[in-house]
Structure formats: C-alpha cells, structure tokens
Amino acid sequence: MLPRWHILFGAIFAIIIWIAVPEINFFYLALIFLASFLIDFDHYMCAVKTTKKISLKNAFSYYEELCAKQKKEIAAGIKKKFPEFHAFHTIEFHLLVGILSFYWIGFFYIFIGMIFHSLLDILSFFKDGTFHAREFFFFNWIRKKF
Image (cartoon, rainbow, N blue to C red; front, side, top):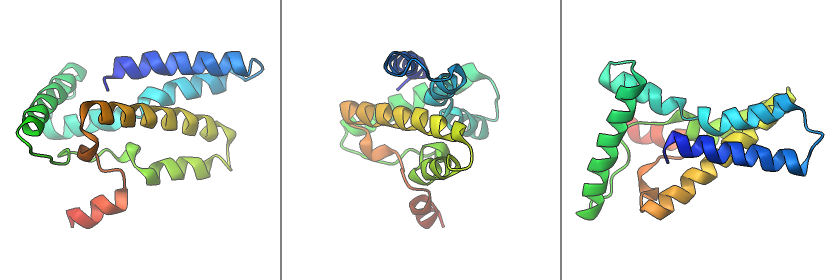
C-alpha cells in the first residue's frame, strides 16, 4: 500500500478514535497517526541501502519498479519473497513496542498505530495476491539468511 493511503487511513482512524474517546490526549492521537505511516521508514532505509541514493523520490521509483517486477513474476506463477527485509513490520518489533508500552504509555499508542498499519498491509496483500512476499518474522529471516 502506498504511503499516501496509509496517511489517509491513519488520519481517518485517528479521527474515529477521537470521536469514540473524545477525552484522549491530542499527543496520543498524534502518536497513533504518525505510527500508522512512519513505520514505513524501513522501506525508505532499504531503498537507500540498495540504490545508494537518499532521495525520497528515488525510493518511490525503486519500489515502483520492484512492484512492477513482482506483478510480472506473479502473473508467470513465480512467488518470491521481497528482496528487502522490513524490520519495523515484523511481529518481534511489534511485540517489542508492545512490551515498551508497560514502561511508557506513549508506546501503547505507537503500538496501536503500527498494528493498524500492519492490518492495512495484510488486507492489501490479500487483495493484490502478494501475501507470500513479506517476511513477518525477524528470526525466520535470520534463519533463512544465515
């Protein structure tokens, strides 16, 4: 899912939370909203690492080409994992942020935004037929990598 959709749906989600819980602190709403799309920073880091260019526009172009290649492979019956590893999208990272919420309440709201983002990704993967492409577990990636 493109970042613009994560931003839009994250804003809608934060507004719904605000309507449902009007006494919620604005700072916590902002954390939910920001976490709902800033989790994708790992995509940017992977693009910079691969292309050696820090341009955000270049990162978008890189993923556009990668997704076009992936669609062609899927059409040909080839199902491969994404070549990059997105650490912020793993179950372990989510659990880490969830555990940190016991020490600072702000992490709880970041966790909510991250979970919302991941649910949107999963829905998008099912819609596009690309669920197989993402590695969801850090330790599984490590095991396969080494």
